[in-house]
Amino acid sequence: MKNLLYIDGKWTGNNLSKNAVHNPATGERIAEVPRGGKAEAMAAVEAAYKAFEEWSDTTAYERAALLKKYYGLIIDHEDELAELMTKEMGKPLKEARGEVHYAANYIEWYAEQAKRIYGETIPTHDKNKRLQVWKKPVGVVAAITPWNFPAAMLTRKMGPALAAGCTVVIKPSSDTPLTAIKLVELAEEAGFPKGVINIVIGSSSEIGDVFLSDSRVRKVTFTGSTEVGKILMKQGADTIKKLSLELGGHAPIIVLNDADIDKTVQGVVASKFRNAGQTCVCGNRIYVQSGIYEQFIDAFATRVKELKVGNGMEEGVDIGPLINQAGVEKVAQHVEDAVKHGATIVVGGEQPKEKGNYYKPTIIKDANEEMLMMREETFGPLAPVQKFETIEEAIRLANDTPYGLAAYVFTENLSLGTNIIEKLDYGIIGWNDGAPSAVQAPFGGMKESGLGREGGQQGIDDFLEMQYVSIGI
Ligand code: NAP
Image (tube, rainbow, N blue to C red):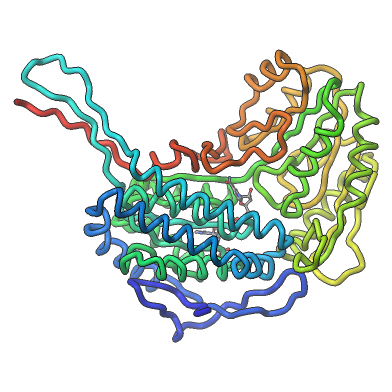
């Protein structure tokens, strides 16, 4: 692998200072990548700007063919990509393989969707006019992505952007640049023309500043924390930057008395402990109705005790390390605060003996609103459970947050489920489903969880401009 920046069809950055990439399972330094900054970001924007005219002039069928080829190459390199991902961010290899497929599917789905970017004709009020809506690619797109899904967060942006006819400059997280670099290598192999896809890695503030202030960048698409999303929104004000923001979550899980216990435990474990709890849609607080409270906790605890913690490269591991020591400290702080406020640890509640950024999968019961873990995103393997009596109380607790990304409801009762979901202010709902994400569905949040949607037919809209044309005949 080249471990370099890719700008205007050239691998570059050898002359720059380097950032080390570490394996969070072992602390081992696994690679060094150039630390790009303002100059590299500007060069990449320039390259994408120059390439836009020709790329946007290709037919949807030409773009679809390239995207399909790219999809095939990603699938062919599943093993290499999955191992890179596990080594640089820690998720178990089986989850990394799943992510490679999920990521590739965005490319394939938008290869097809490129052919369905339809305009409109509008009934005219005047015999001598024809009214139409044309769709055009927005232009240069800058994409900033986080470390927790190093492949899928990238392809969820690249797929629709390239399909729409935009050129892209990617900036992955400094913690996980290797998967992104490999994905760009495969794009080069697929044959995307120079300048259509560029990658810069390094100083996030310098690179972000170029993306948000350069008027040639017509759209910035960001996935990451709400805190950084707010900074970008402010920075983009001067150029009225088109922005998509996929930000933090604090997902509630509501379990009603009539829930099917086995299905619920399976769904809650999938939602809470996938990627060691480091997903934006993972259940962060579990509200269980009083009639099923103890029964649920017993069944949940039995399952969670079976989860194996360890290096994601090892067979059978369910919970890998957290991305860094700060991540471990945040979980420990939430546990300590909960116990101080009267909660009880049911399972886990400590770091295992293994070296590395590990924390044992943890269940805490008798949680309440005063506890930090019920108010902010933990981003770790901590499952707090709070008892509730009435459905109104559960809805109030679930909505009592500035976030609105994902929520989960477990009930077999159609009417109750429908009524609750209609009142939840969340962009994504899993009803008896702990893993609702799908490439063909719109993903995104309400309130401070973001702007816009990614995935599905809606996910390409943000990469297109609408142009209304009134034709006098
Ligand atoms: P983060 O700190 O916000 O970083 C995300 C990306 O932004 C990284 O590439 C980071 O680069 C970059 N960045 C940081 N400061 C920046 C600045 N001032 N200007 C421009 N770019 C900047 O978030 P994270 O810790 O990587 O990811 C975890 C967060 O992402 C969680 O809150 C999670 O909920 C959220 N998330 C949301 C979704 C969703 O779809 N809604 C999906 C996944 C994750 P460096 O790493 O190089 O600093």
